[in-house]
Image (tube, rainbow, N blue to C red; front, side, top):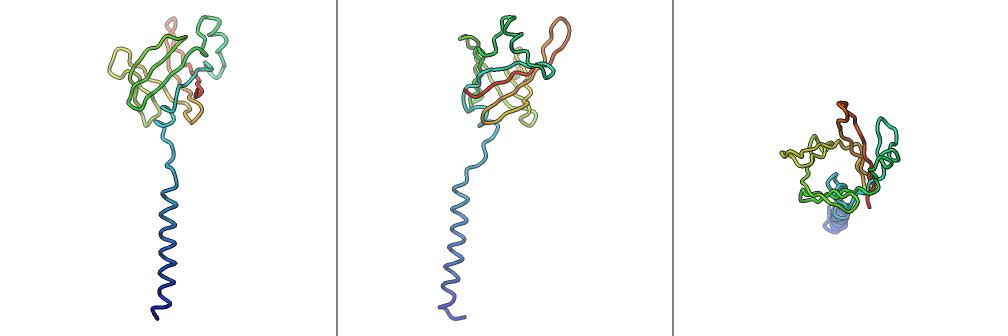
Length: 144
């Protein structure tokens, strides 16, 4: 094949190769669960038990979910705030990022099951004991 015909073919191949590389560089990787969780402050908006919204009932009993917020940092620190009073701690994912483990290895260790986590909402559930019975509650948050 004459050199004059090879040159256009070579230029075409190089153009395709560089265009493909540039396209890969422009695509951002999908956000991770850590990215979602640490994106800002999560403001509480609901408490559910067995699929029923009990937010108002809890508020009547003195626990207003809208006064509760969580903030997770990428360095493993978190802060929970209720009605202006804050409490710090440590967090990490466990169980293939299906669990947020608070204060691992301490007397305050507390697992939270992640039911939903995306760019706008966080739903976590946990088990509490009340009058000798166990209840699974789900707290719902929106990114503030």
